[in-house]
Amino acid sequence: MSAKYQDLENKRVFITGGGSGIGASIVEHFCEQKAEVYFVDINVKESNKLILDIKNKNFKIPTFIECDLLNIKKLQDTISKIISEKGLINILINNAANDERHAIDDVTEEYWNERMNVNLRHYFFTVQSVKKAMIKNKGGAIVNIGSASWMIGQGGMAAYTAAKSGVVGLTRSFARDLGEHNIRVNSVVPGWTMTERQIEKWLTPESEKELMKSQCLKSKLLPSDIAKAVLFFSSEQSSGCTNQSYVVDKGWL
Image 1 (cartoon, rainbow, N blue to C red):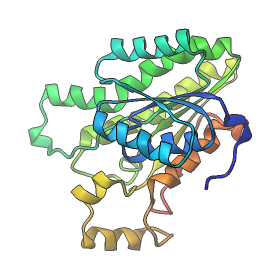
Image 2: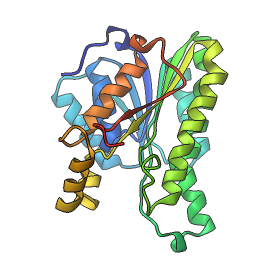
Image 3: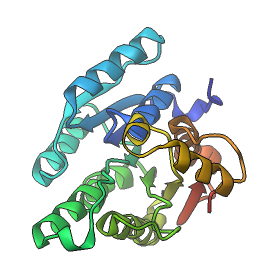
Image 4: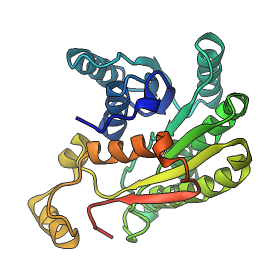
């Protein structure tokens, strides 16, 4: 059970990449708070499974919209439709990303651009799409999900770490530009979070042992740990917080 944030009840929330992993936990936590949640993803099967799981927990049911975030026009049209049909968006969570590994010599210009588009570009255009509605509403909260990978100098995925470091720059610029309209912009920076994808693809007994040596807290970081921080920065309980990047990593860095 998460802490109860009374001000999140009935708030309209838009979440990217909400069908699985950290995003799914964020969706579930907002639904537990009785927020009005809309999330986009390309994975229809996982997204529908999430909705069923949330329904079985008797949380408020979210709305899933299939959307490829590489298609900026469709993404912006989706947001515009929500605003015109349902009302102003109060909270934006930019979460969608993909940490596919890649060797330096294997990266082409096309692959590099695709990684930037998957991991950074849509963050800008979602903010652009909700900006006017938040100004009209005299405020809002935006939380961008980053990654500690670039902060520890992780190798084997230079395009991903470059994009994720860019999330910090976007966050700070948006916070400065939108602050006069009472729109708070923060970034939550996860450490190595044990999603199903991470466990299946990269977690080994050896890597887990090394991780536990590095972390101050000797337990696995879970998607729910990230979601709880996102709730805080979305709530009025963090009304004095903007222009910040908050690391949630159990003391890994």
